[in-house]
Image 1 (cartoon, rainbow, N blue to C red):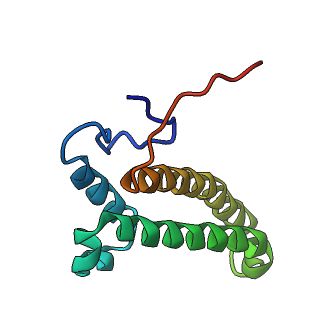
Image 2 (cartoon, rainbow, N blue to C red):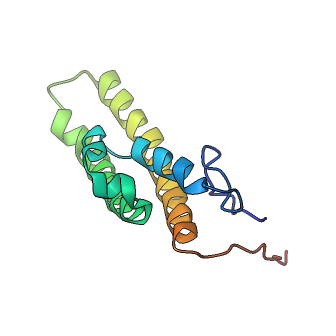
Length: 123
């Protein structure tokens, strides 16, 4: 079975019985711990995937806003090297969140029953 490159290695392929259990565990790791308290999210991985997608999307927007404003917001409160370190953290966290968002999206598609096929790309 083909899996897209965004497929998280922690999630078993949809061709494996009970793969949804690994998907739910991985999704729960992608959201705040408080989400574990909601039985509906543990019971319905599609709902969990949808909420995880929204949560991570909001985190991406927050990271972008934080990056844009960090130098101005922190000037006078942190030394320049610390501000640069904060910007470096945003530079690492932003792409990580985008990759996570893409992985959540493909897992959600699989939970909805979508099948993935490899496509040939022309150079």
